Structures are given as structure tokens and as C-alpha cells.
Length: 117
Image (cartoon, one colour):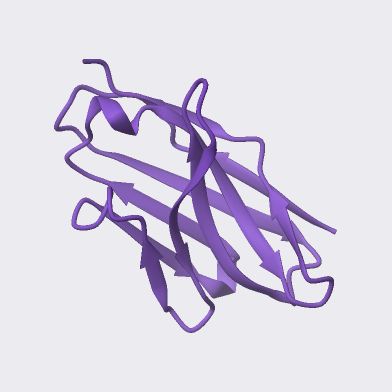
């Protein structure tokens, strides 16, 4: 079992920055990819960014050049640095971790990011 705890959400003006963090605890030895998804009201949950244990990253086109995902494997932590935030970035951001042993994904409770128009 793995538990994920997000932090760092909040409200920021357009053009501002926020840094999200997620700490994994429990049986983390078989965790490979970690990442972030987001879900705006009335919309589906979409990929934001992922990072593997060797540092390979993927990003949604909508955040490329503005968001940066990073990871500290020793601390089982993943961060999402979000710059040049827009109102379209407003959503609940969920941390996720893929467990290769059980071939499944764990999810955090989410942290809200609000960027007013």
C-alpha cells in the first residue's frame, strides 16, 4: 500500500507561480513513474506531467515550457513547479504513482489551484 499526500495548492494571480509537492509513504520500493493529473469542474481528469525513477519526463502540451516536474527518489517526493499560471490551469491537482509490482496506480486526495480570470 502506498499513500500520497499533496501540498502547495492555493490561489494565485495570472502570471504567478506555485509549487506543488507530493510525498509517498508506505511500500514505495516498487513505485516507478510518479506524476500529476488535474481535473477542472465538469471536466475529465487530464495528465499534466509524469516522471520516472530515471528522470524521464512527459508533459501535456498545454503546460510545456511553463511547468517543470522533478523528483527526489531518496525522499519519495515529486514536485511540480508551475510558472506563468493562467485561469485555464485552475483545477484540483492529483498526485499519482505507478506501482510496477501490482501494476496499478495510487492517487492522492488532491490539492486545489485557483487562478482567477
